Amino acid sequence: MRIPMSYDMMETARVTNQWLGATAQAIGAYPAMGMVPNPMFQLLSAWGDITERSFDRMVSRPDWGIHTVTGPDGRDHVVTIETEVDRPFGNLIRFQVSGRPDKPRKVLVVAPMSGHYATLLRTTVKSLLIDAEVWVTDWHNARDIPVSEGKFDIEDYTRYLVDFIRAVGPEANVVAVCQPVPLALAATAWLAEHAPEAQPRSLTLIGGPVDPDANPTEVTDFGRRVTMGQLDRMVIQNVGIKYAGTGRMVYPGLLQLASFIGMNSERHANAFWNQIVAKAKGDASNNDRHNRFYDEYLAVMDMTAEFYLSTVERIFKKREIATNSFTLDGQPVDIGRITQVPVMIVEGEDDDISAPGQCLAALDLLTGLPPERTKVHLEPGAGHYGIFAGRSWRQNIRPLVLDFFDAAAGDTKAARAANVHSARHDRAHPHHGTDRTPI
Image (cartoon, rainbow, N blue to C red; front, side, top):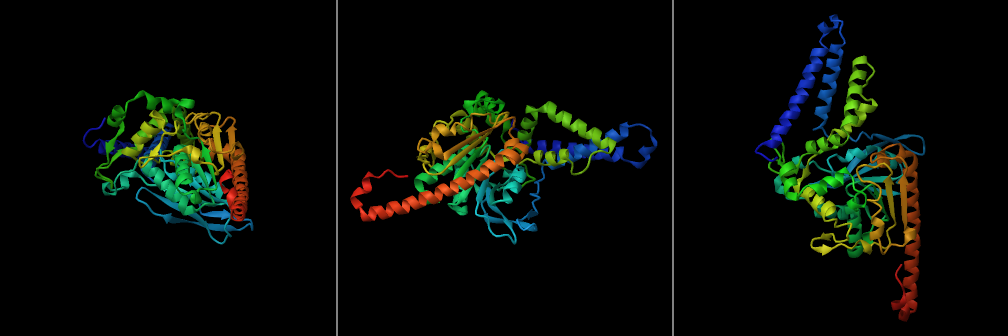
């Protein structure tokens, strides 16, 4: 419920738990406790260490941690991150590989704005960087954006995508993961109608809610159960005085994290208890599998209230993308305008966030795209995270996506050659021009 200083109260609770963890760790690890032959103190120290680390990570922006890439010459090439487009609510960044000739594949990874930082796609980016030049949409934490920068809703998000695609160029292979899938579809459709020369080379949609009602999940059901007024009152808060965005209305990342954990509370509880026991036994390490996952998973960011509410209302409730009724600046965005950009759809069989069928619904909207320019892959046994960052991605999906990029490049060359041939034919036989069907 929104009450005065509720954001600061939530932050106070987080800091208190972090302090309790640090205190417990200090008491349990105090040298004098070694004289007491009781494992309780090892467990207390382990609980404190993991608790302090967990609550600290909730306000820490993770580092990309991609420092080198091994090139075809067998040498490690240094990776630097360059900002190519700087915007108040998000940047377009490029992972520049020093000393390596540019790869012919250009990939724009559209990261979700759903409570986590773009670094959630770290393994995705690293795996693509081996064989491609990679750009990523790096969204900013709303609590750090001054109110003077104005609003940011799903239409603003779509405009950002349009500009980012244009910045990478028409050779961009756009890969949208989860939340931005429907908006990446809309941005591509807008370009197809208003700036066809800037259309991306291909569009890959991974586990996103094009039609949330195609196969409802707990996430989509929640959006249907509550009214917009209830949602506004329950989850929207004012950023506290500690941050640059003080006064901005946001959906706090901590609330989003609580909902994520609540969906699989038993699994997370078991994971933390097992880690506490491992820490007490001396079997845990600073960079083990548990810490690598939860250091990223617990790092959350705030979303602007208008973005969160417009997403729920227009994507989940009104289903504007699913019904092809989405508008941008008051103008209809017709998904059927996509006629040349090949589209690949990837879903996970066990995805409990965006269930199979939700992303596949895009095919019904691509009425102008020939079937041979679409590709669909359902990954057996894969959950939501696995289809873009897990073993399923590395071993099965990534090779298919790279092959799709290459096929799209061939289609583009063929289409350009056909267009050149048609243009020459028109000049030689102008009276035939009106009878030709566009490719």
